[in-house]
Image (cartoon, rainbow, N blue to C red; front, side, top):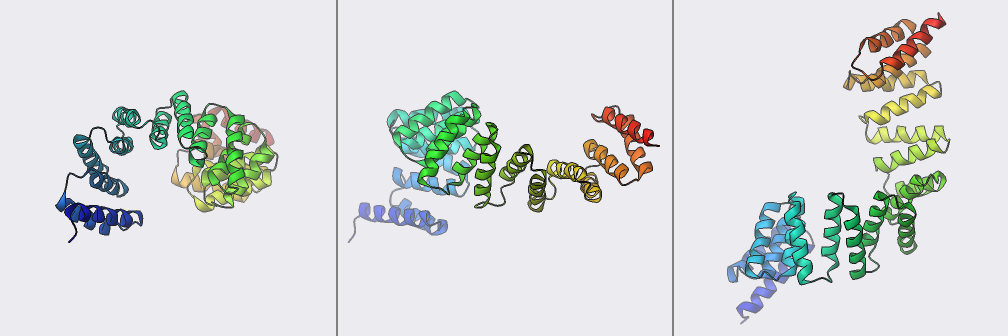
Length: 329
């Protein structure tokens, strides 16, 4: 007959297997049976706390990890799990203390250095974040997620060449690492190496086509490189994924004006104003589109309304457009 300790270990292991496979209900069944044998087993509590964490029940996870620490205040894993949970509960100071407690007990665990680095990044303390990422890399050498965390800090600190070096190192190991492709693209973009930025962004989008932020960077890089047609095409692609993106729709409309696509431009501005009638930038360019379509009376009315709107930011430009329109007559 199996002893209680052996049965407890087996139930915890079975629960952990199911948990790793995403079968949370089955995992909970095994943990409940294990709890009936010994509800104060810290391994069980840590696993069960992580189960709550994975189910986004952070309050219950916090309570469970606190029980671990009450039973064993030197349990480094319990402190780490608690810290990660506190971050998601927006308890930054408590999370900072928990990470430090975990590292005090087990300074070689890269996961705690990683969590601490991310916490400092949330607090916009990039100097401390850089130091923590470097320590994490020392404890977990070669791990791409740690290297790219450091690269993200380099981007924030305007150390674009350093970020690029890290991204290249990761890409040498895995050419399809999307985060490294994005990092390399952003670094080249900020260094104004637009051709190389475009190449990396396109490789990234070949793997994740619906990333609007990266496609927006690609559009801007293309425009900066002088390829207005391709830049416009990328903006239009963004609108397929996100039709209500006001900034992109206005930018697309403005570019349509430059290509004498007056009707397309007008349609974009009308779409924006239907959703947000107070969008004065769209109003101004709508007036320009109307004037270009020889709808001068409608254009004049748009410009006059903007000029009279003294609280708006576009009155001066509207006045210039109104003057140009009147001179044409």
